[in-house]
Image (cartoon, rainbow over all chains, first blue to last red; front, side, top):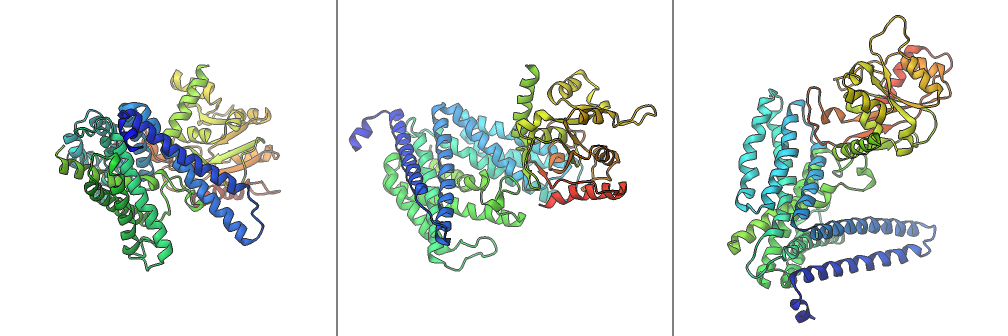
Length: 329
Length: 203
């Protein structure tokens, strides 16, 4: 089996990977369909079963969406992937800005962020200017945004408004753009297999979040920062990160890393992602909202795009940088 | 054909920039004759409420456009007539013409309309006092359902004097239909209508 897989070309390997993932999703959908056909009963337990089924359905639907997005991104080649992640950045930043009140004086800065900085950043990724791309936002945009804001002649809450803008740009554009950058990173003897690196990162981070969530529910420990997250505690965080690192070690075969290196990389990525998610939760608490996304939908439990990708936005830059630094790419 | 393409393009653009989310709180979207009345903060209000309505209602519902602004260039007047099927209303009151006349014509034909009873765009957080037009129409067409609506966030998309819009999620909240009580005073009704719109801000 292993020998057969390694005899395939890079494209065939990635194709096989998608085949496998889609197969898993089909199975999960089939199982849920069968479960939904079962008699539920009218009692409270039946109601609860139906609720958890609906929850699982929502989760599955968003997984389908994410996998299809990745698949289309891979099918359409490098340019397609760049455009795709650029759009994800755009929508995530739109959500972030909607819930961070800006003043009229910020209009030009917002235009700059959405229509200049975002395309430039993704163009830098697409043209593989990796040195410039990693400093473009923290160095140049860091100056450009407050200059444009200052020229708008409105000193009220100036620092606060600019900090919010900078934050939105850092998380939604800078962080997200590192995901397609991974696709284009060139390892020796690992050509055209960037999709595996993205899959590795996404799998490891999502596993960490999921295990952490389940562990927190099972353990019922006192939360470490109760005002920010009712579920976060160091114990379940450790379990989540540990499991993700183990999974990373097991997945070493699809990466250019040796098992030990893969384990360490998974550890770094999942720690960064889960702590980043905690930080975004703190911002949401500050704004007094349960979820990003469209207003009023928060209460129904359906979150926004940013809720789904925030961990990735924090994990991707750390992962990308440690990979480049360690392997001298 | 060109108008249809332009309609799709505008719809796509508005959804990309604002999401144009409709929140039906007080009533379902229904193809009955209605007057939607909403707060007014930006020229884009008209676009947003148009985009937020479902396709079927969009063709039955006619927005109201200020004649002086929307007929100033050929492009603006083409877009308001061909794409939005808008009703032009003069903002300056002339002695010989009732400004409500075009609205009365449209309502008599059975169209639904979108009305901004403040008359002009406001810049404060709270909407200005409502003009009497809404009351007069309610009096004259008691069978038409009056639906209050709150348009949220549009002023952030394109503040006055700017040309490039900024992407921010916007929503239109539709509330419980309002009816004119028997013998209700004009001023009381207008205050009540304005309050119905303001109340939708926080649902």
